[in-house]
Image (cartoon, rainbow, N blue to C red; front, side, top):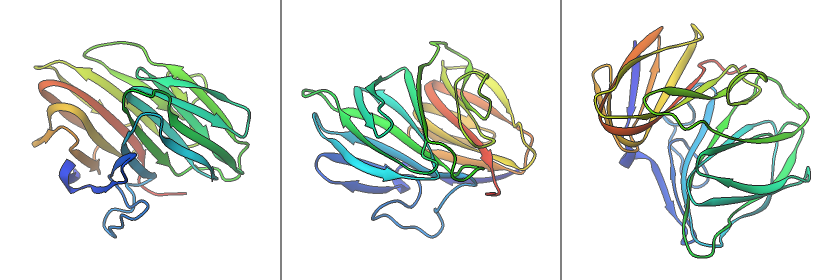
Length: 236
């Protein structure tokens, strides 16, 4: 088994007033040659957006973009005609493909919006752009699948052999994650709480990249919210 540990306070950071952003991988003004991506996982941004503020209309192409609100309400509009509000307990996905423009704003004027935005390299270029959002099941002590490559599977789907699982895990929970691909790795991100993966202790906002293994163990030291992102380690 090969692992790489990223503490929460080692991430890139930019406070722009309206946006307080932490970057697990090189992004915008943050550049670290040792943290460009983890396999097909290109971006993991941990954003806090001030009331009424947000990202104006801007373009993307050939990227799978996943947004997970942690608190507050995200207002979305895009060039395909989609608009709506995404809340905690929901997940949004866009396949940028041949090109899309969108805007993302804090819908509320009186409270902050906290979210994770994740970019995954696609395994197909220049696909037709698409948008989807769904509500996630409310379950405890279970690794709930929220992203897969399969349209008919649980969660949203993307153009990549990737599986994401989200766990709301209580203190004392023990389990095991079995990787679906032999050449895959998992980037485990601790949204909240404290867990141990194999022999590595992880606190809130810490991360562990895991590869060259078929499975790994998870032990929860205190109530935790854990995001597991399984991706191919080789980019097609």
